[in-house]
Image (tube, rainbow, N blue to C red; front, side):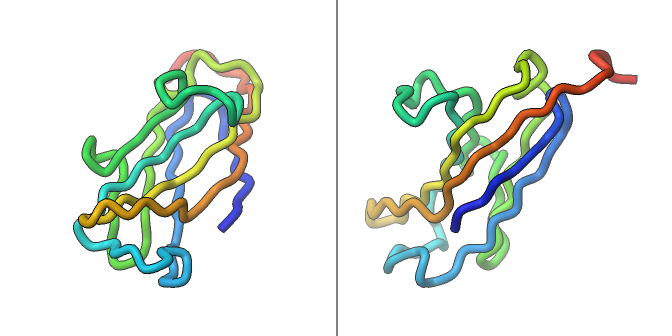
Length: 116
């Protein structure tokens, strides 16, 4: 799956990805660890990612084959208008790693810089 996403800087956002069996390429979603990584450049190291979310930290949840990724306001609050590249990887209990979704995340400038 490839997706172009947009959100306003400093806002809460939810990214929903439906994973099909074909995308898993034999990996098993039940009991798997999921990782969402968004970077300024595809060549950046994972440690330099602009946003990282995992199922271990509770920011990614799975219900059946629907993955929900929670982006918090502080994840993008200090970003100027920019485009990030992102992916979602599944590592199943046997250690098989599969990238199930990729895309661009466009961070849009907002007018308000403080929350109500």
